[in-house]
Image (cartoon, rainbow, N blue to C red):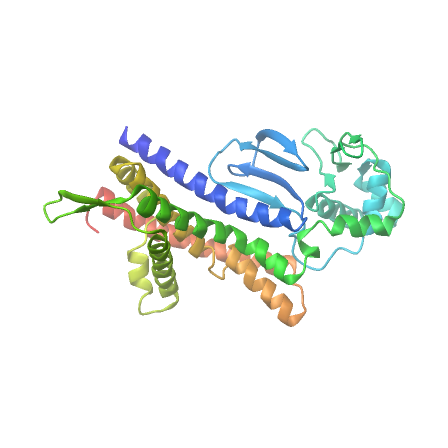
Length: 357
């Protein structure tokens, strides 16, 4: 039963905190007029939900964490065939990649690549499992103010192909200026840290804390002022930031890793804090939220910090990081995290199962 509760508590913690993190990306993107085609609770996969203002909100088959699909975040230079492919797709509503290639005088691979980018931009819906060929369709569109109600795969009226392309591109991440892209990238981290600050205010100022003596007896109940609670929150964020920075110092890296814990360790701790009461559990969530936020600042793809560093590199050099380079960096980053996870998991097995760490 304890194991079931551990799994339940850590699923709740991670799902809520990752959902908050992705919510930051979603809110920032929408504030700048960037399309977000999906905002889901859970890992990518089969899902159920509803669509509102062009975004599908719902729950996936594996409700752990969450994600926001911000349009136009594909790496590399912009595909030169997008304008013509977009016009052809919108004029017909439903198109085959072969027809696009023939119409535009390009290869089938080039047509497929352009159509998939338009899917990434939120303009088209990609091939379904039941489709025998590479079929792309326009998205369903509803605008009650203009009385427009178009079903999926129906033609979209437009006057000028170039204006259409500019209007669609303006709703993507890649079309935004440097500072807006950076805000979108860092908004998830900001939300994690904001959650922690709010939690500190609730715990220390609103509900208060019990002061105990050396014998563990409650002496008095204290509610500190909001400023002190916020200061305590920022102090904790600073401590975590310093600890994470220690990973880059050969003299402190081993100690940082030794004092870290894997998902297994977090599951054990989540039950301990939950058993201590709601406020203790909220405090645990705030600690994990800070760790999640600070870890995402690491300059390693696919983390937000890694993408942020790439944006700075592209801004300074005026060069786009291509798909292959991005893929190599992402795979390298994933390999590092897998190795880190295995190391910490071994520590937790020794610590919590064999009790010899």
